[in-house]
Length: 189
Length: 253
Image (cartoon, rainbow over all chains, first blue to last red; front, side, top):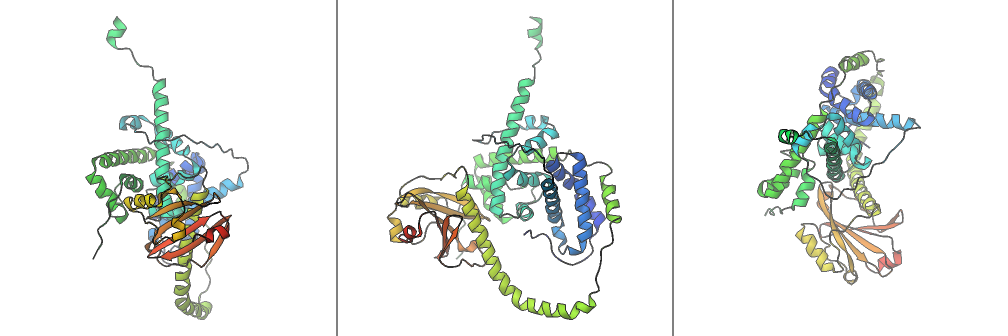
């Protein structure tokens, strides 16, 4: 049982809350759905649920956590109702966490990063996505996913290790495709 | 007298610092204090942490490049404004009943909650340990040795709790090895003994302080083929787990 929701209290300023969280919720939804349209729908649906249940939010500091929990639940509910969703499991062989240069990382586009997130093993993926996309603390991630704090730390550790390996492999693949320009002296000789 | 805080290994510090947010929002969180101090002292860890923060910042920055559609915010607000009105009930007729319930709750809930939360936390702990044991591929032990004393020396070195006053019969068994783990921000140890039948007897040890309140029950429980027993000893919570027969386990604990 997630602890984010409590009963009764004061009026929430929904406009302020929407303004503050809709972009990060949208990004989290995008990482889950991989579709801009579905991410937009999911984000709207989440705020709609908040508006309907705003009288149930007691602790305003928990709103962020509540929103991410609700969005993820809605996503899982939708996935469960869809029958033919192909599931491709990717299990990279990871032995050590590779070092990636800042330049190589900077050269990657955002799409490559979100694709890499999607290739992290499902067990670890959501914790890593919440870490990067929501700026939730490890305690809030534990609350959102309803798992112990130690498990969050373990999933972050393993998940980030996988993310690095996947990105390193993507960078290496890309560098193989680059055809180096001939230097002037080679070209003229 | 306040005990000096034990130094942590770089491995443990890295494990913790992976959860440290790149924007520095966790700087005041005491969970990271030892690891941050260690990173400031140790150049190798310091370099790793700098690189890790750079990596985290870069990933967060890349992901923030995804801008929501320009119309999303207004669409959300329009959806909220057009929602069906929330139905409110008249509270007045229910006030008397609510008062009675509230009064009962004031008396009963703290008693129930303390007992229940103690049980829930122990349940979570048990589940986490059993999941770890059942994981495929099987988790690796940090140290593989047949010597019980070697396992306890290793655990002491790792600042992990060792088995307090082990039963003499248990000491007669060879060990398979040991491992340190983290649960809910607390370090715990696992020592595995080899029973004559070939089955293992796993002993998890964690400080009692990891639990606000505790309801560990009495005797053995059978959960998914595992025999599980909790015991509180010298401020430590011991969890014995094995797939061996009860008759065999009872000879040793």
